[in-house]
Image (cartoon, rainbow, N blue to C red; front, side, top):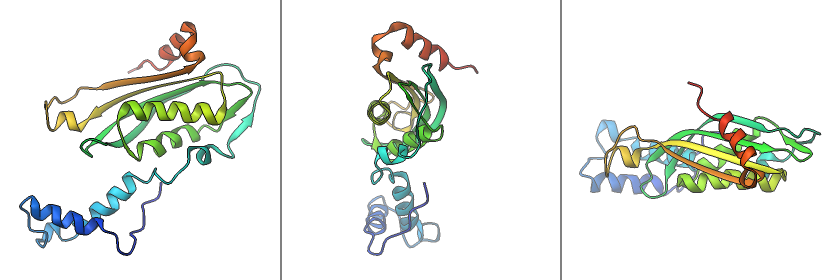
Length: 193
């Protein structure tokens, strides 16, 4: 997504300046003079998924296709901010679906991940939202999503445990009901490194 253009009267720079003062900093010092504007632009960019409807991302890229085998897009990188501390969490997502007469353009699946990850999130919700959006827009036999991420709220503060990864999944339709479909998907997204 494109970097947002600052809006006149944006309240975020003033809030960031107040925050810097509360933290004991001097917002007028050289290294911090432009920080309030930079933080505002960064936050606007990192949360620009709010104004985008998932169905609009996929619209125009759904094609009639008589294909009935699993479609998987693996290792989609994502970056998000946790809704509890507004600290980054980031990792990879694997998305698969079993078509029912329709397929979606390849680039639309990573774009869908980007839309939902550019909101304040928790990983469980992000995983579910991607699965449900693909399911409702495409109407496949089933959808599977697996996400693996590092959370800086756990690594930098709190328990301060670096390197731990969180895994989440959401299985819908055939991916939930049929153990063979689920196993095939999980085998396809298994790390090959």
